[in-house]
Structure formats: structure tokens, C-alpha cells
Length: 187
Image 1 (spheres, rainbow, N blue to C red):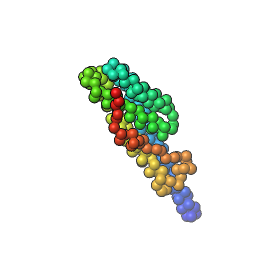
Image 2: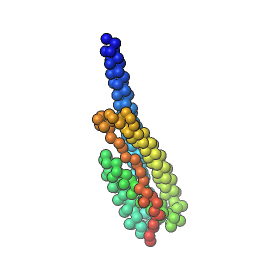
Image 3: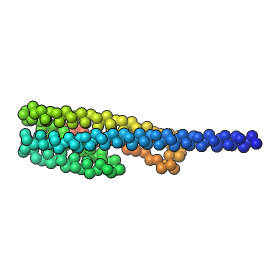
Image 4: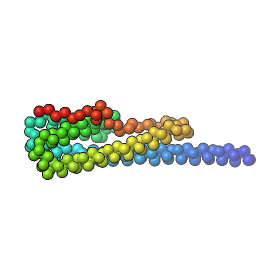
């Protein structure tokens, strides 16, 4: 009889451990999804600001059509991937958009009237604020991805995570080659 209670006790402990691991994985998975949602909110805000910024700049730098087209194409590409689950493609599109936005701000250095325009200054401030929020959201997302991936890799969770359908997530990384290049404005 004592052996039966010991076996039942061990079985109960194993079941509680399994439930605890599963709930921990679900909690971390939901945090990752929440963090990704925060990024989406900020990206939508950026998408909404870009057309206003372009229209403001167009009045001062009408001959910079190629620069505007690149920004519009990058914005369209990023927006088209908004509902996709392919994080890698979305990251590439967002990095391309960030890179092309830098060229718009570089244009302002060559147009003193544009730099003095209140609409441009306000849009630039809002876009800079949004970029800062995107960076903060990326850090929050990456922290949650790190915690989730770590939980998937540590013992004993690693023994059951794959069987329960959990897979690691990718970090939201900036393409270093793009970020380290100087913005080139051609006239």
C-alpha cells in the first residue's frame, strides 16, 4: 500500500511539473505575441506618417522623384507583409523602409526652406518619436523572444517543448550592412 502512495505521489509531482512547464511556455509565448503586436502598432503609425512627410517634402524638392518613389515602394512592400507570419521577410522590408526614410531626412539638409517648414518639422519630430518607439518595441520583443527561446532550451522543458508544438522565435534584428551605410543624396 505504501508503494502505491509513493508511485501516486511521484506521478502527481510529474503531472504538476508538466502543467507548470506548459503554463510557463504559454505565458512566454503570449508575451512574445504581445510584444510583436506592439511593434505592429508603431509600424502602422509610421506607415500613416510617411505619406504626409512625402507630400510636405515634395513641395520643396520636386526633382527628387526617385527618392520619393523608393520610400513609397519600401512603405508598400512593408505594408503588404503586415499580415504575414513570415517574420524574416517582414524584418527585411522594415529595415529597407528605415533605410529609405533616412534619405528623406538627408534631403532636408540641402533645403533650408524645408528645414524651416513647421509641417515638416512636426512630421519629422513625430516620425523620430515613432522610430524611437519602434526601437523600444523591438527591444521589448527581443527580450521576450530571448526568454521564450531560453525556456525552450533549458532542461527539463526542452524535453517536452517540441512535443507540445513550441518552436523558437527569431529576433527582430537590424541589417547591419544597411544601418552602417551613410545615406547618399544625389542631385
